Each structure stands twice: as structure tokens, then as C-alpha cells.
Image 1 (tube, rainbow, N blue to C red):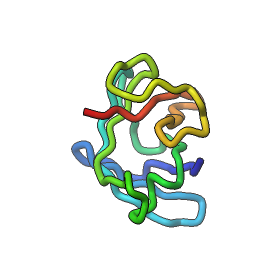
Image 2: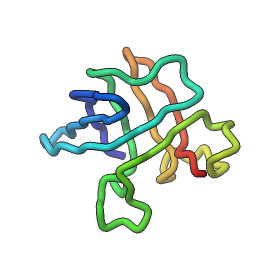
Image 3: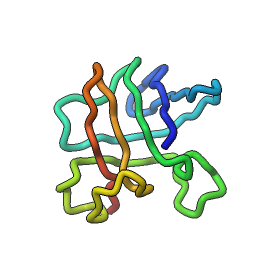
Image 4: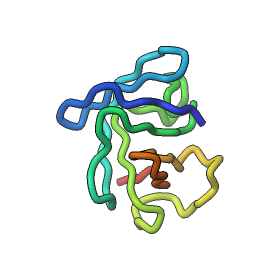
Length: 99
């Protein structure tokens, strides 16, 4: 998993930076959480989701609670569909939603 800092945010568009100062820009939607991530929060996600050559690559990702029926049924932290949102030192595990 790659840890990314949210360095800017505009209307669902998230600007992210990794530890090597690589920058990424994605549209992201978050469901089943009390408030959306903000500048200074962190995301940990599979490196494949950042790779434009990956078959499942997108610039729009949707994430929600592990119990949400719109995603794959997994809790494996090594799964490409699982991410970790770190908000004020609190870890929230979410999964990628489809459909």
C-alpha cells in the first residue's frame, strides 16, 4: 500500500502526494463515513490504483464501508479494493465500491 497525503481538495477532486513527492489527481467519492477527508488527511491504497497501465485504473474512485453491498466482499488488507483513510490519527478501513 502507498501512503498519500491529501494536499488539496476541490469539489470531489483530490490532489495527493506520496513520500517521493509524486503528485496524483483523482475524483473520489466517500460513502458511509461521517465527513469526507480533508487536506492533511492520509489515504493508504494499492499502488496498482495509481498506475495508468493497470487494467482497473480510473480517475474516479468510490469508497464506502466494508459492509456496503456495492463492493467486493473482502476484508483482506492486501486486496486492491481495500483502502485505509487516516483522519486525525484515526484509521478508517473502506472498500472500493462498484456500480
